[in-house]
Image (cartoon, rainbow, N blue to C red; front, side):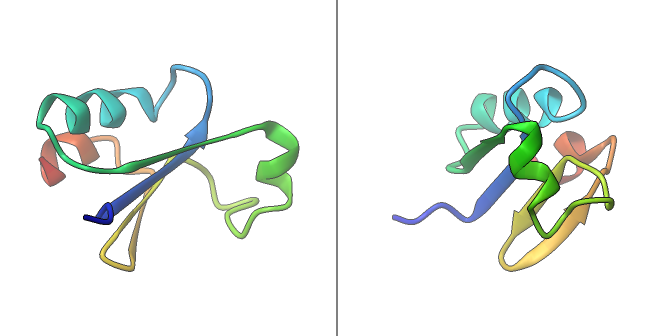
Length: 71
């Protein structure tokens, strides 16, 4: 089954880590797109900030309570 969500963030613990942990704990299937800094600069989110969680083709940008709201 394809994942229903994609988490886009750097490969470091930071604002995206709480969402990673919550999704894994909840058993949700998601793609963990861990970007390098040069890759971020060339991405469609450059200047908009990360983390970005794509859920069913919608974007959730930088929600601090994202892990609570989605799980």
